[in-house]
Structures are given as structure tokens and as C-alpha cells.
Image (cartoon, rainbow, N blue to C red):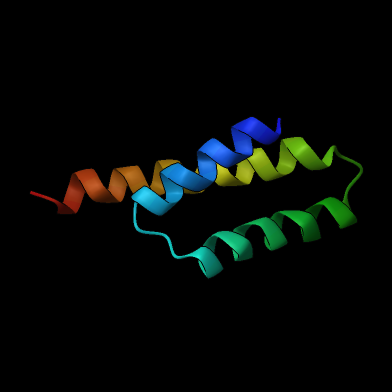
Length: 64
């Protein structure tokens, strides 16, 4: 799972997210985890994947 999160960090950086933005995404996911009975790894990966998709969609829309 750690390899997957590392890959997502790299992709988000490539899409233009700053390091502090990525950390905020993870902190937000951790806050959700503290309030719910779910697995930490799954919630963090889900959050990172969500923002990766948003960044990719933004890049496709506005890079023309």
C-alpha cells in the first residue's frame, strides 16, 4: 500500500499540487478516519486518487 501512496504523491506533484496541498489531503483523510471505523490506508488512497482525477480533469480542460 505504501508503494501506491508514493506513486499517487508523484502523480499529484506532476499535476501541480504543492507538497502542503498533498499533506492537507492526507490530513483531511485522517480526520475522516478518526471519525469513522474504516481502514486508514484505504481512506488515504481513496482521497489521493480523488484529487488525482480532479487534477487530471483540470489539466485536460484548461491546457488547450
